[in-house]
Length: 215
Image 1 (cartoon, rainbow, N blue to C red):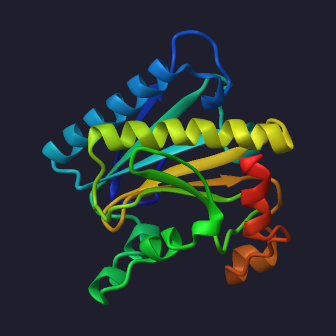
Image 2 (image 1 turned 90 degrees about the vertical axis):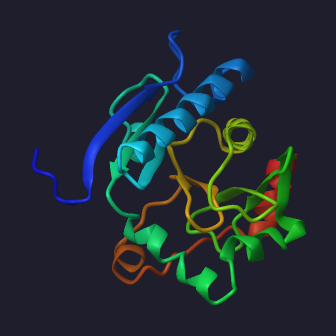
């Protein structure tokens, strides 16, 4: 298959557990810790080999692009940050950080672990969209911080399942600005307005999403 994005030169798959599990939500704490440790190590290896950016993604469910029923994540080794990440970087040059601004919405906080916080996205593209980020501004996660964030991601999926059942979802890691994880459940279909104008219609207020997930 031709590579339509020249900066992408390598792809890796991390199988989360040797036992059959369909979702990160089904993993034990020790298994999540192992996954986060491997992801951190592979990102460091990529950097040492001259790949300055690694896009880490989690797809669960066929509607979210997953081609394997076994829980896994993917790493895409890139020669440059992707467009979505580059859009976040100018905010730092203007002494403004979008993630720091999100963290100030205390009423949207759902849970925390260590320095990592899970919040309902204040301008989510879909119902129950979540952001997981450290309270302290940092461009790259340390291993222990990534472990905390991964465990919060497992918690987020479990909470989402408690409210909506097992739903397709996508999650990914952004670094370089204020590093964070984003989780987008596939509870709605992105149509022409969303794809053509990047105007997202979300009928669930973030405050209500946070309340439901806390419960």
